[in-house]
Length: 201
Image (cartoon, rainbow, N blue to C red; front, side, top):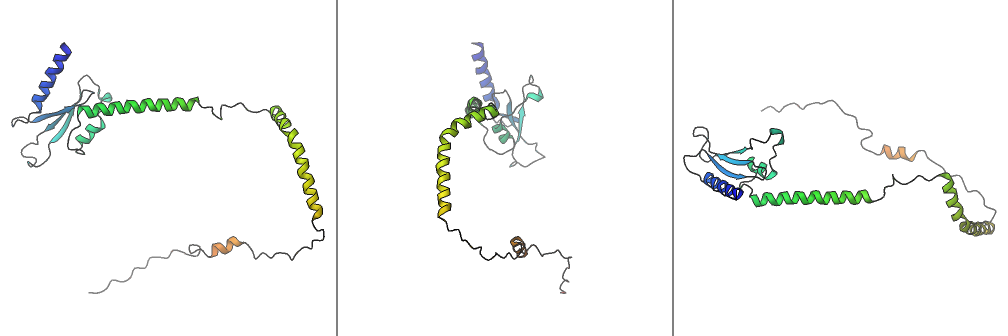
């Protein structure tokens, strides 16, 4: 019961602090699940006009060391005037749930990835294993190779044997040199800057 009454008292106190009474210099805006509280400060009278935005400020819990202070991104946006309305507590809780869900899904994806066999983990094939595998595959393949070899020999026999060599092909040189000659950047050279004289008025 004490926690409920404390949270009720704290809620009433925060609602009282949110009232924009004329004598107050700072107004409570909201808090985050980490315990940080956020305020708007009224500008000093001589420094800025009335239309100037209020300064925005965050207070960390005293028990938290500065190295462990974490401000949520939504509150960062509000502090830097990137969003006009402060984030609600429900929005912050949804964001925390989304982050937890993303971490869970990432862990599941990593586990699935680790469960798959890797090519790096496969045992190396020894030469003896390779020759045995080739021998088993080679028995059926040897007969097929013989049939193909006979077919090639018969095809060679059918071809005419009196083939006269044709005229030798002429090569005019390296074709890449011709392609390089045509490129506009191959012959360009930088020149010194010569400014034109200014026109007389």
